[in-house]
Length: 189
Image 1 (cartoon, one colour):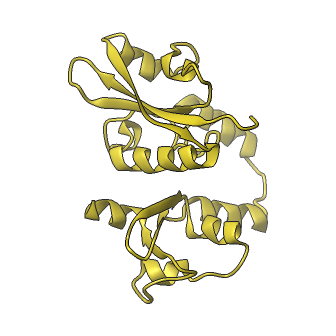
Image 2 (tube, rainbow, N blue to C red):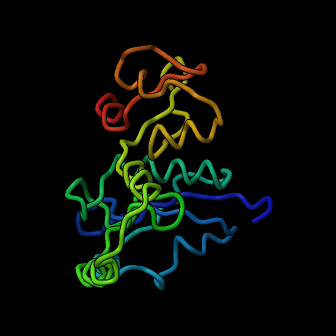
């Protein structure tokens, strides 16, 4: 993608003026924000009633816009998880992280996995996947980054940092940042 600048957009329902989708793109003509193809059936059912498009953030790096997308999807909440108004199928950011498979997909996966032994590595990865999301803040309390888990943030910094201790209020900061569980941070804004 080179030096392409990314953007974040909202789709808002005309009938209720409620944000129902948050997405990102990285073309100068905002192609993805206006695209009706390659959307979920759920999105299409809502969109056929009419919607507006608003470019919320523009000119950010891909990593910055992915972080904002994750944060805002967490803030607005996904209908699929009974947490909010969004029809987004994932938690945002990279690929299909957080996507909930349909009943048919789950049944097919279940059949494929009958009598398979689960490796220790798979068990470890499953535990990580169910970790609590965290938010990285400056010491003044300004938002820096959303992380899907403390483990991800630790891996990024490639050193042992005490994120969980900060989240559980056992220490005030680590590596020059404050850290909070995302759900706790959302209660304060």
